[in-house]
Image (cartoon, rainbow, N blue to C red; front, side, top):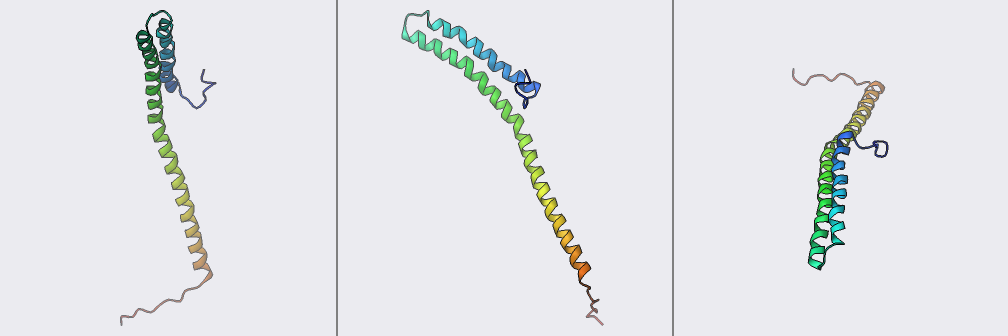
Length: 112
């Protein structure tokens, strides 16, 4: 099953298994909608069915977002570090080439 979702780990798939189970459980109240006699009963069973499907989905998405946040933050920090490293290397190379190309005469100290 992981072949269909290569970006998910096994732990993330377990969390999404709750969503699948919730959808299957939601079929029971939806089948009950066909057997009741009044609109309020149909509405109540439909609401229960929706809750059985939506609540596990929201939980699984929240867990996914909590797991993904540190990875995104780490990726952003790595990109910033790489940019700063390139800038520092360019500054060091420029300073090294400037000191090699121009000879600076020693300056006498103004204090006698």
